Amino acid sequence: MTKASLNGTKVFSQSAIKRIVAESQGIPRIINILCDNALITGFGYQKKRITNSVAEEVIADFKGERKPAPATSLSRFEVGFFAAVMILFLAGAFSLYLHGRNFMSTLDVRPELSMQEKVVSQGAENTGHSITGKISATRVETKPLVKQKIPRNR
Image (cartoon, rainbow, N blue to C red; front, top):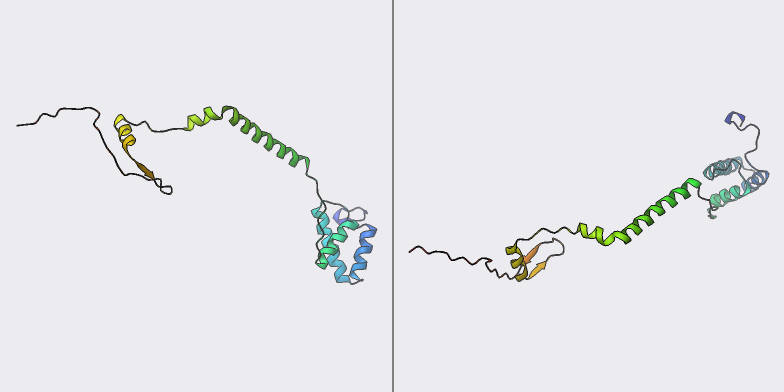
């Protein structure tokens, strides 16, 4: 263990060792499995020492019983990042609330219709198809905008 830079500190607490030995009934293979799982679980919880609670969790998992994992706290970075995202979201929502109508009206882009198209669209009964978006006119009455007398050639 000193080669792994442990420098004389004990990895397993005395209560964790007693619990693992008692559960394994002294069978070396089971001791090895429980200790290996305890080391992996301790690494997952970022603990430098395997305590009795980690040993209990590993033993419950080994038996097929699930113990709820101990609650972990969020790091300062995670809390700060979450707070920054929420502030940006709220600022955007507030800005949309204040300037929403003006902003949304600039997005309302409709093509300018000629006078002839306006007359035709007012006289047409349109049915829009919701999937394709195609509009078909069922009745159109057109009226010429400028009445011209067309000279007839006699």
